[in-house]
Image (cartoon, rainbow, N blue to C red; front, side):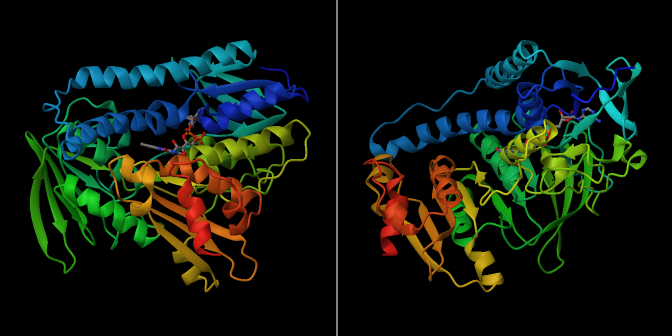
Length: 462
Ligand code: FAD
């Protein structure tokens, strides 16, 4: 049994939240034990989320750019796709990053335990290693960073070859001739786009009346125009009522807008209907830690749970379930655990959808402003006048600024277009600095770049 001293900290889960908190706490002088079942840190983000999906989307981008370049006078022959090499390259990217984190663990002299932890009480964990052996570990402070996992449709088993979740899709065992993506959120659209570029006939089915719930409709329409060309169909207000795995595919029954039923057959079905927190197997009932009705651990502004010496960060601590939100919370929890006075109060958390075009936003959306009856002034700049956009062979994109009409302060920024995910960082900084649209207008932006669209949108408000 480990010694309990005031300077020790255990971090449960080594995803972006957990490894960031562990490194930060070690830098601040705490003696840190990081626990995770994987050989190297990385969590969902590096092993089976952000990074492998972006690697596949890069492949998709190369293919679609090669296909579209005929319009500017360059014709490549039909791309030959070596799926084994694509998979190997994607795995190499993941291994470089997770291996790098493994090396950093050794450098920083953290203790890394491979295993699954659960609370025995508010000061002790039971850790089960990969061979099933258990050990007890005492701690003074703990950070819970156990993340989340995909939600499956009721009655559908995981681990099937044909009915897969995001992890199965990222394994890229083959390129199915037809793929049904269940769920029109960012994970479904990103993975669907990657498979469509690799050659699958992709259909998307979404229960609500639009893709990407939460995102302004003008940005979504711009994306949908392109997706309509690469997907076989996008079925809105439609739900899956039955899935039957068969020898040569999956028989799917869909229920449409008016209750009509249709039967379709797909090679594979990807379920991407959301994620849920990993809070059930943690023995939280042995502590006073509280969960909300969705299973997220309740925390205060310093990421403390109802047990003040136990913190929770990242996906397990609530929406938005994004890696950069996990980093920010990790920073706060580690500083507070080391005796600092940090607090988590971001003005804006960016969201990025890495489709083509990319969509990114931060702060208030136009939809929220309407719903919450907040008075705003909005500038929408279409990219067809952007020199940089046209030189990239594109003319689709919008930059939108949402400002307070009284004070000119920027309340929200949204961008759709190639590279939107990079551009939004300027918006997040502007919001953190409480910038006015005048500040953007008076900042010299490099020419010719897509960042000038932020400057031009600000000029529309003057
Ligand atoms: P996780 O990354 O989920 O890590 C938790 C770790 O805890 C895991 O390694 C798990 O094995 C371990 N664990 C669980 N239970 C225990 C236990 N009892 N004991 C010990 N260890 C345990 N986010 C973005 O910001 N940008 C993106 O582009 C993006 N793309 C994504 C694409 C896909 C396909 C998916 C699935 C997710 C994507 N995300 C993206 C979301 C992002 O991956 C998560 O928000 C992020 O990984 C959350 O980090 P975390 O540290 O909270 O937990």
